[in-house]
Length: 212
Picture (tube, rainbow, N blue to C red):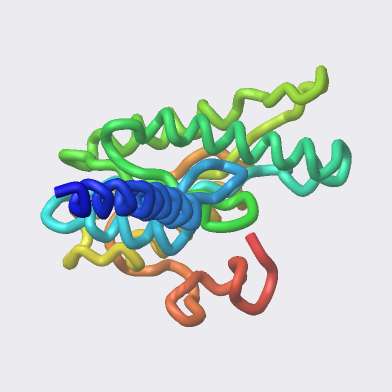
């Protein structure tokens, strides 16, 4: 009996150590899926989770590109730019809370996937997102201007539940809004209106030509 107690006593620290290791590992895995500046999901994690959300239910898919972000970095410095990205992450997380997810696709580009019962709600979501990103960000007493171009699509209009097609069309809408001076725009249907390169709008980041 005493040998059993001794063995158990020796095993307890080891078990506790493995338990702590497991917690730390899970935290690292969660952190790896999150963008450290915005706190939102990174592109791959966002797309994986949004694809699962899309199974059997329609979504509003939005693509967001900040307006004038390069000027903020150039004028106020990269620390100010980081603060803007963090503020945007907080605002987008609040918009999707309890009904969807948000991700940072890279740079100053973001995406949202929100459960919507029908297309009539998409306009309200686009307006809410655009309005939230028009509020300036204050950093060290400096008021930094903020704006965004937002494009969106309701996936119920697509012939199949295809996240990549939805994001491509939302990206096209975002680009059209940006070309028109910012704000928001929704698109309908699955037919692309712009030339694509490897399934992405020609001219956007990651393709040849001018970036949006």
